[in-house]
Image 1 (cartoon, one colour):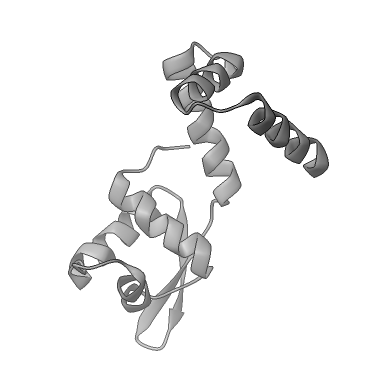
Image 2: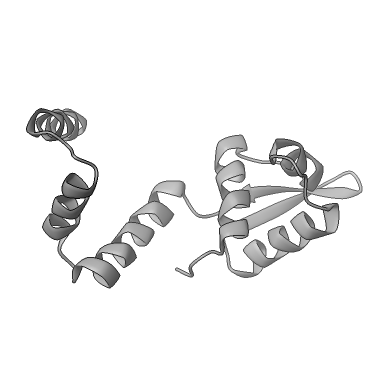
Length: 119
């Protein structure tokens, strides 16, 4: 799976949230200053070329929808982060974030409890 640029990821986040949208609806959801219509349209076409987005014809325009699940992309991105910065060790990554964010033992236990409940 290909990596996304910051702009592409921002548009994908909106498509995952909205489930489907035309370019105008995407622009409406973007923060100020709003990008130009052509800019967002280009990003959506790039996402289509990368296989992240599909479209269906609606009237004279197109409605776009995600082809890649958010969880799949998130998992791939986390694995790339772990491989690139923590030599493939999730333990090293968790340890790093615990130290950098001053997580207490009780907060870590709460996280573990949440993980166990989701299984």
